[in-house]
Length: 359
Image 1 (cartoon, rainbow, N blue to C red):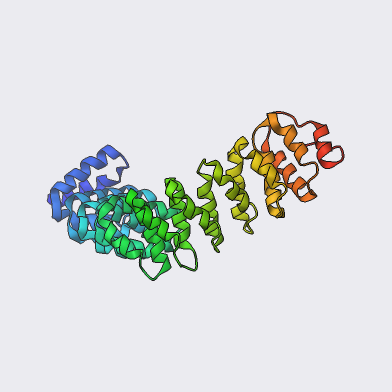
Image 2: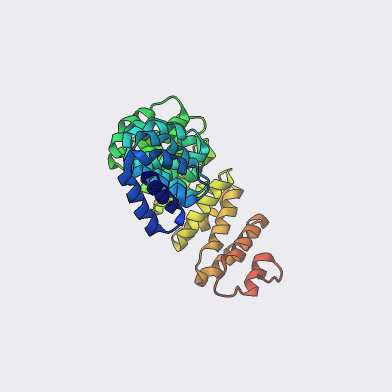
């Protein structure tokens, strides 16, 4: 009779109806360890609902023998099943850490394993998280950041130790972790990270990003110095960070970045100057006479990308005497700006020297 009842309950797992699944899970959890072998077998079902409900029941029973099977479910082909496995492992706490850490090594289960370790919140998982963070896709950084944030201050000793690690990738992971912990007293550590000696610039790049996002005024001198970094990715992040500050005194540094040999740095500087609208206009007009062609082209482009139609005729006339490179870039910018007012044909004549139409 008991086996028959068990069979009926297990058969109801695949109904696909949430309210029925919840009732069945409670009933299976009340049965306890006797039903565990059947639930472990149900985790191999081809039915998504069966696998999910079996995982939920195992999370309530909390039999340690289920941990490896639940960890294996972290690599399930369905994301919703993987998410269910994450939450099923959390009640097992520290008992599950070593098995879930092993799942970090498999790319198929890494994202879910990071989430599980974050929810479990055991600081002993921090070294493993730091080991794998730089070998993952950048879209997963958010998962790692959430995990470090949930573990909180308990992760700090491991993170501070990792900041001194000889391996650059490990130090870069520590910067991500330190940012996630969100302690305002960590500013000196990020400033120090901007001078990291790593040849790939991973630590400096991440530190520049964090400082720009936190908008710390004390970080401005260090960010200005970072726009001369030998690594273009670091320079890009430093310029983007400076672009988030509203101070007028930073405009000359953004204009200087227009002449960078890296196109990504030029683009970030151009975007930052364009967003400042009229505040940057005088400096951009002066930059039209700069000795560097890239700066002149960038200034001409920024002048016509600024969304202020009322001042457009004067800005077009400013470009009448500049070189053809600057004209071409400026007209392309004007074409992409989608101004609400038509551009007068005579202004185009003054700019190009012959009649033209901008569509």
